[in-house]
Image (cartoon, rainbow, N blue to C red; front, side, top):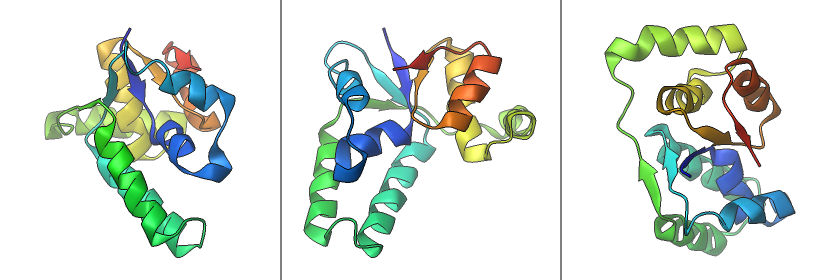
Length: 136
């Protein structure tokens, strides 16, 4: 079954110090279950990898390898949140004390009736309140 993929999970696949069995379990779902991401996802992944390089967590070569791996992952990038949905997005962010970037994941999962794969505790809590399934 398709699911919404939070950047926290993808980064756990890429960054050695964030690896986990739960992340591996979710990675094994990809051949059979579509991972859907909001349009912000690519920017979030790129920024996180650049930040990891700048902080010395990974080398430039490792960052480039991570980019290659991300391109190889079969994710479905959703269209950007239309301006008409901005009030709903901001309301979600405000009510659940998350950023509007994180609210984009919640909005996508809620509107499509999909579970959210995340390791972010605040996102998990917000998902539960919104009756959105949480993976793993």
